Length: 276
Image 1 (tube, rainbow, N blue to C red):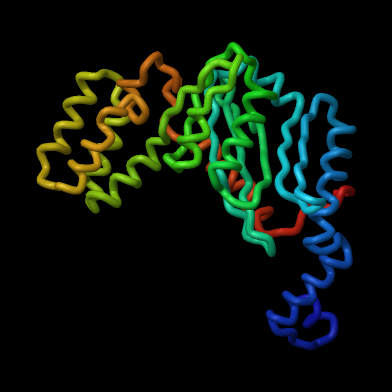
Image 2 (image 1 turned 60 degrees about the vertical axis):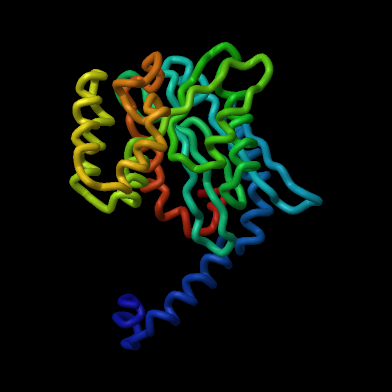
């Protein structure tokens, strides 16, 4: 808008400029349909240039259904990382609404490592089961027990409980931040949420019990009912009660949230041109 006004002395409205930009992007890179049709070739080209990369594109009667990909160096690096994966899905906001599924971890120096990606139509049980099955068959060695940290989406809860013959079981732990957010919806009290957050990160069972009792002492029926429903699974949301220390002290799935912020601009843009 500024360039046209400086060059030609003509003020262009925002709406007209936005439409012109969309036309220019379509001329340069094609539209949404062309972008999705190009995806298998794009992943194939990436795989050719990146030895060890694994990708899988599934279609139904010639129509794109979902895609999965991971890079060889990331697969190799995970062998030397903690046995913890954070998973989450982030919504795409372009013409075709979809979900980008991501599995992340970090090494001993707390450097973030993206492990696997999937592009699916919606976040449901079928897609999460498909994603987790591919992660377990391509990233996680059959005899390695891995802890999965995520929110309490019902589709994820069911997907991580599936047993795959010949593969070690998965240990599921809940993201503390999501758990406390669910607690807030039940109690509507931010001070109680701070108390629960403090209980979640406690290192000893004694400290955990003391901090949890502070919440029970408050007269908030919604908060008490929420805790009563989840107290039997406290090993999934309390560091002190984490059986076997499977979560290695990781209390949230913030790894994925941070990476989602990196991809914020890509959520709504067209798929990239192979030459970029």
